[in-house]
Image (cartoon, rainbow, N blue to C red; front, side, top):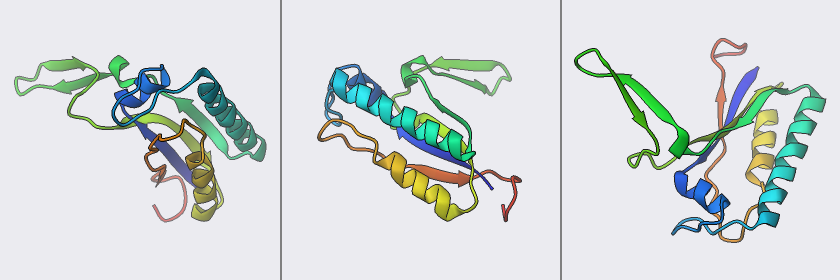
Length: 137
């Protein structure tokens, strides 16, 4: 079965990773940032070696996002980020092929243990089965 495993983030989280603390996120040191990158690299290597990794990517900060919708007049409405009304956005994801929900949950627990500075509040890791990819979905 295929699963999308997602981590959330906010503009404040990205800012803190650039060394600018906020009320909810302490500033990351270069060593803490490198530890996080090493953790993610090892995780991705392990998932590739097991054959479970289909794709996985970290996404740029919300300030570099663009929202596109259609206005009431039928014309496109384009808004560049960050979006003040949005607390958290998708920060990264893994598309995995796993034998069971239990196995992908084990991987999510590992992701949730990603290192960071003392005091960082990590949002939950979200697992969603991919519809039509096998199983009951």
